[in-house]
Length: 118
View 1 (tube, rainbow, N blue to C red):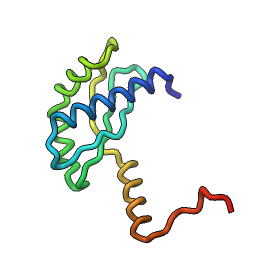
View 2 (view 1 turned 135 degrees about the vertical axis):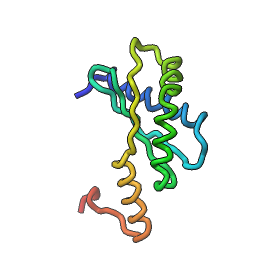
View 3 (view 1 turned 90 degrees about the horizontal axis):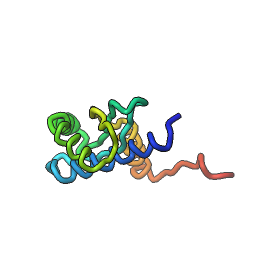
């Protein structure tokens, strides 16, 4: 279980990473920062992302890895914490799967009734 501080730092990291991507990345592929996970000791963080089109995830990963130091400097200027974590990047497969399920539901015209009482 994470503390409120831990969650807030992860949320801020994702926010400032997204801000950096909006400013620095090309729109082909469109990169979306979905969330961040921070290690308990705050030394490392993983920034999760998706792309449109999904086939360009590798291109986005290369860009993010190359721009990682600059992104970390941008985050350092924005956040007031002692230690800015080392950043790693990963495709958010959970979000990708959710998007695929949404697409299938739209195509079939069916909706889940699991949440609705009978």
